[in-house]
Image (tube, rainbow, N blue to C red; front, side, top):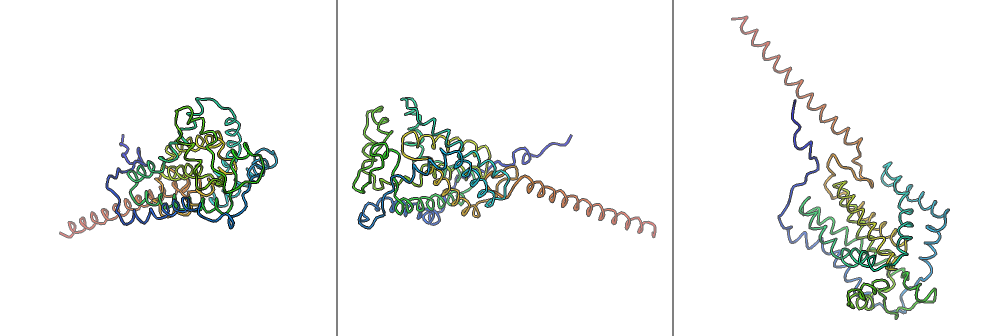
Length: 345
């Protein structure tokens, strides 16, 4: 019985890369992230007299229309499926119908508050949100090479630049504002609020989040949610190379979505917009990524579908068969010429 080669058993096994990335490409890849951090830090110096009006009812109204209303939910689900299919031409786009339903279910789960849930929400929202991009960038660089990690870094920075620019141009109040002030007009002079994270400070006996959010330079930056953007971008890059990694990071996305709503920092529409920004950046920068392994295919738009993989393997088998035929023909010709020489002698 012929043995299977290891490449067939482990088709997506990456090569561990422990070499540090070159400094110049790394510095260039960090530029978008540095621009984002500068935009976020310095936006507080924009005079309030020239800044846009703060929307305090837009986001709750959008949530009501697209997630709470059955017809709006149906329309939004259909629109997501249609847009995704037009971009990807992938029948797996039908899975997008579950995104609004999942968000609605997570929103309902987020309405219950317990101390154990405070800790469970604090882990993704207050810890993993800040550490996961770094950890994932190191991991993807070690597994798939430093150019791949730098492509992720560029997409990460571009996504955040677009996100902060939107938050400055379209300032919107978070759920905690509506909980405290209803739909009263907001002012740029108002301090930020930790909302549900104040319970985490109380639980651990600290003032970390209360102090941090009260001094936030961008108080009315609910739309889009960069917490959602961070997590979804990690999922998309992980899923590009491995369905197993995609499944793990998909759980992280759901965990992060729930935590943002549990702590009253984002509406459902914020999370969708954050996911849209990260998806757009992934689709743009995907051209610079290595192709997915043959046994893997990206559920969100990668053209290397199973049928494509089958056709490619068929072509390889055809070429191998041609080589065998040619070798056999040459061997037969050699044997027949040898026989002719023997007969002549």
